[in-house]
Length: 202
Image 1: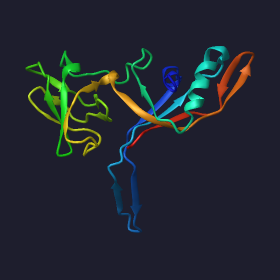
Image 2: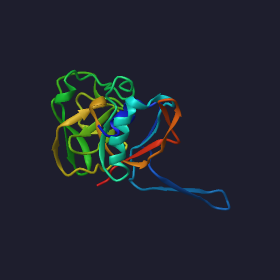
Image 3: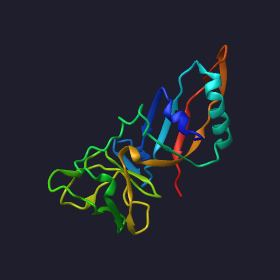
Image 4: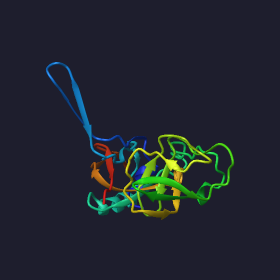
């Protein structure tokens, strides 16, 4: 389970997929901005203090083995966080929808059964199975194929892919900040900072 237990039991979580942007400002006040196509998912997780040591000990042992050099999968499907990214489109059989990558863009390929409404709505998550997670930025009507996402062009090779949508999406991440745990009371522990994870870019 590695870090999934930490995700599942977080007391606070910050999620970002913003691009890194560099800005300069001239003496006359003109602002110039530049951004690479480097929208990477980042997660900052705060754990509750005072949790039972004997309950957490086995999970601490597991994630400390993973440390900050092992890539691990995480998801937001457990009941405490499944409200964050539920699928908000109208397709009842969304698990059967396949997407394709063509000329660096993401498209609906097959599996749509609706004749009105939207296949995807802004904010929906789409993972190409075996690949990255993308966030939809514009609604995709039932008769449209082009999917606008937070990152373009997409990273996967040209082809057709099965998808994991909404809470079924899974990120491959690496831990970039690993806090120390400590005893706060008899048989209870806390952490001296936040866990931080970043999407792996291969």
